[in-house]
Image 1 (cartoon, protein in one colour):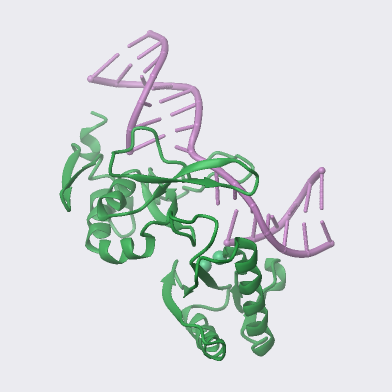
Image 2 (image 1 turned 120 degrees about the vertical axis):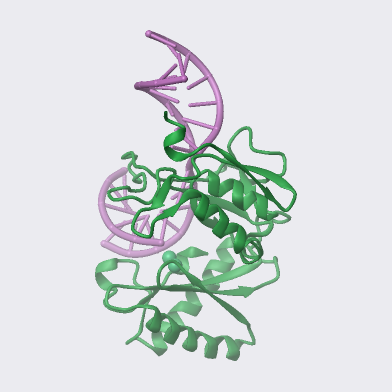
Length: 246
DNA sequence: GGCCTTC
DNA sequence: GAAGGCCAACGCTCT
DNA sequence: AGAGCG
Ligand SMILES: [Mn+2]
Ligand SMILES: [Mn+2]
């Protein structure tokens, strides 16, 4: 009876790829009454945008295969087991349309990471319980040189989307002074990302340094609105610019 | 969630 | 067929 | 090195 409780597996046609969905009736978001198949169909509905954000980027999966239910938590950094986890390496036996890219970490370790190329890859990952995709700021063709500088605006307690938008306005002014173009998108429940397309010409370290400088300048201009303090305790009710995202 | 082993 | 075990991330920052 | 953070 283990299978029928969550429904029999389905097979969806996603742009010509057959994608299996197990436990389609399993409730992933109890409060909203959203099931796993609902989530898969949602991601297929927004696949154009999702694939545009992920295309050819090595991508870490954030998987919640038991759903985002009361009490569920991510596996802790210290190894305390949880219900959810990040996954960098492509699982064995992934379908042949799932491309991978070999990443070398600063430590020298390597990983074959999922490289999203089409909607079916998104649907396949969601079937694994993926709720959130975390793309690297690089493309598979050059994994050592970011093609994107990211300005990550994280509203802290006491602030929200409106404050993030206000900081984005400040960022826009500074971007304009530099002759750069920023592309905003929502991120998480109330945050924003601003992506700046760059030539894949600089190292991670160089891009991070640019992002830090940018963030510190915004903090200098609007200390009432912006913080770049790494320590939560020192941030206050401001928008944290997380330069470490780069 | 998927795979493997064991009962 | 059912049930249980195991696996599924990484690095940077600051003191 | 160890704790704190994404
Ligand atoms: Mn963020
Ligand atoms: Mn962040």
